[in-house]
Amino acid sequence: MRFSSFRPGFLVLGAAAWLGACSGGSDDTDSTTDGDAAAEADDATATDDTGADDVAETVTDDGEGETDAACPDCGMIRIYVEGDTTPKTFADGLAGQTPFEYFIGVSSYQALRSADDPAPVLCFDYGADTFAIDLGTDNLVGRCPTSAFPLGTYTHGMTKVDWITYKVVGDVHAGTLTLPATFQVFKAFSACDYEGTHYAAGDGWVGYDVGGTTGTIPYVFPELAAIAGVTYRTEGDAFYMVFPFTHPFVIGAVDTAEHWSRMFWEIADSYRWVDLRLEGYAAGRWDVSASGTTEETRMFGVSGYHIESSVD
Image 1 (tube, rainbow, N blue to C red):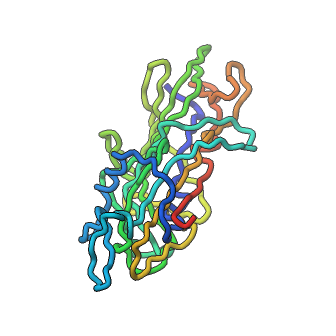
Image 2: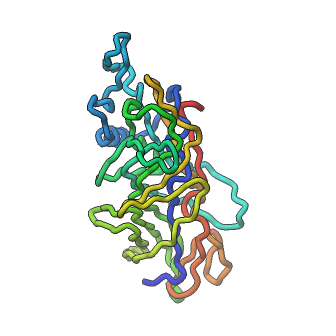
Image 3: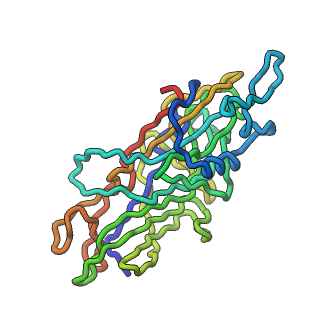
């Protein structure tokens, strides 16, 4: 099946500071993180030799560290991400729908003291075990001890992005037939494995389900659009996004506070297209043609973001 002019969207990940304004305070927001996902994140998070990811350290008067089981997140930095489907008003004249089964695969997070810091500080690294962020829920993506950070002021974050995938629905037109369809968009940003298949950086496809007939179509995605303040970094077959924090993150000599940041991707009606008035094309439905005109996608799965953090 060939979709002429078919240009599915893709997520531009990283136009926000995951660490945001993480300095002091406590998490007064109830986390809805799935227990299994949180446990997986904790198990995979990079640690120092003290095992500080399991029980945080607190410094006593004599200068020796002891565990504080009553506050396991003291002296820790926690990173959360979730999708926000709060309805929004758009003035772009486009039709839209909310992508679903929306996942972002990431594998590491580092903090930088400047945009071009030659020695980023690792917070967590999952290696080949990509963490799949489910934008349908709240995700504890990772955490790390502040004791792993050299003293200083951190201004940028750097995330390794492995892949993204989401689904949208529409109508496929083939001759005189109009059939409802579900499309899955997938792109590998870094060399990675996804559902048992290895992909080179830049590989992508669009999957379709039309009346029970399924398949995938290889697809070459356009270059990522520029984002103000954000830079892209490629190291071998790994893709990183470097972005500024909302506020600098300061690590002092002794830091036993709970630090957290929760980033919300705004995805309501964020897959947006030009709604054509052609014969057989229904208003508000994304129309894809096997041989004719496919409605052009203008917004690719995210319309914005906002951050809540421990200093709000």
